[in-house]
Structures are given as C-alpha cells and as structure tokens.
Image (cartoon, rainbow, N blue to C red; front, side, top):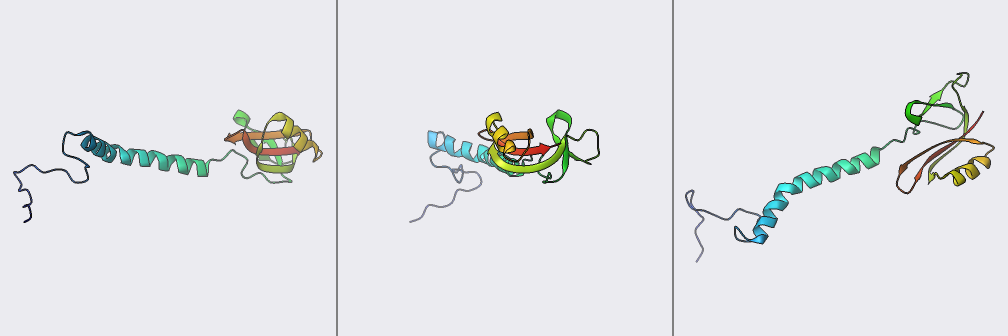
Length: 132
C-alpha cells in the first residue's frame, strides 16, 4: 500500500535533502543547495578570467616598435616616436621571465633590451626582445 501525498496543511520533507529535517545530512544538503550556486558562479568567473587575461603584449608583433607605457605596460608606437625603446626582434610567450633567462634569450637574438610580463603562474609570461 502506498502512503498518500501530504496535503497543504501537512508538513513534508523538502525535496533534495538527504535526511530527515534537523539532522546533519539535512543541513548539509540544504547548505549545498544554498551555496552551491554561489560557488559555481565564482568558479565560472575565475575560469573566464584565466582564459581572457591579457598581459598587455597580445597585440605586439616582431618588427613593431614599442615604448614603456603607464604602469610598466608596453604599447606599440611609431618607430620615429621619441619614446620608442626600439624594434621588437623576438616575441616569446609562456616562458620563464627571470632576469638570467631573459638576458640569455634576448642576447641570442642580438638584443640587450627586454620587456617582460609575468602574469601567469610560476613566473612565466611573455618576453619581448627589443633592438634600438
């Protein structure tokens, strides 16, 4: 024999809980529903942020001239611009940006000037080698 469904004036257990009301399992289930959406929203934001993060060097190509912008950012300028640091001879992405490796990398391409960014984890980022 089946149990009749509770009427409008009879208490019933909320759907989706894993235990009777007042138990630990019930509280955990209710908390998971309440905060699960918030946790998923934060995770989604972090994933989108990681995939779209720009270190300011995304548009720089070999052959262009660059200058230091505000806050240490790099900006593309006309090569005749007085603020130009020189012409880009190498763009390497997702490499280690410690000083020793950057100097060796740029020296191998005839450059003693570099712009770096290290927004990625592990001190990895983009290296721009520049010649005057």
